[in-house]
Length: 81
Image (cartoon, rainbow, N blue to C red):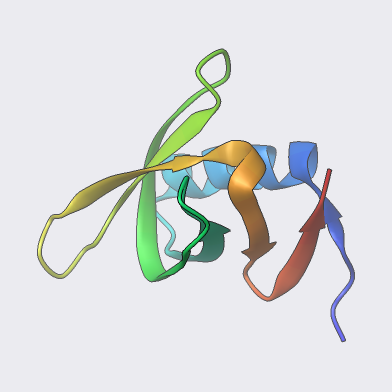
């Protein structure tokens, strides 16, 4: 089992992956409680005060905003607050 990561470390890794144009795997909850998987998506931008990161699907260019505190898994690592 992989080591758990703190949310602050995950946000830094997301920003670094965005700078290096590396794909990431993110699992998060939506506002309504449903789960969503972003497998192989590219991080575009993060907004610290807004608490969101934007991810782009490289296959079709679709962009989604993910609320940072709702991320519960990053590249196979459990995320804790």
